[in-house]
Image (cartoon, rainbow, N blue to C red; front, side):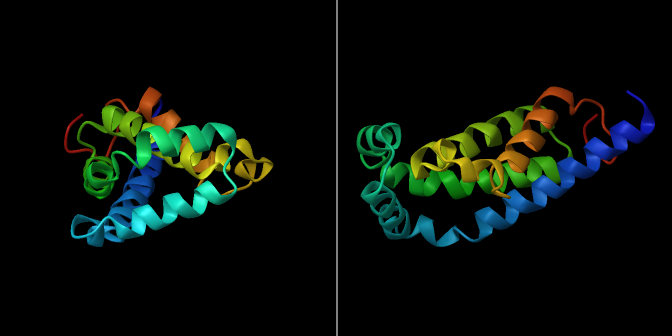
Length: 143
């Protein structure tokens, strides 16, 4: 990979890492209480897309106590891995699954607005690019 392209991917990796780190920091309270997550899931249920409804009722709500701890932990770990450039490809792949999970549960994936949502396609596309191409990037602790 040419040097400018590698530097561009490294900068994308770091920017997305900072994004996920701060998303995780904003959810530290979830370790003490799953109430915020339960409230979000119940709000999404009110006007849920059929796929979202099934997903929330069969996966999210039954596992809410576990997810309330895994989500911030996953976001913090992903953020640090991407910032530091350690296991960047697996971290990006895991983050891609977390983002997909959020957009399916919230129903955002099934709306036109997903294409213009800053948390939607740009984050999804950036993570996909990193999951495929974040190999031996500059500014990485592990190349």
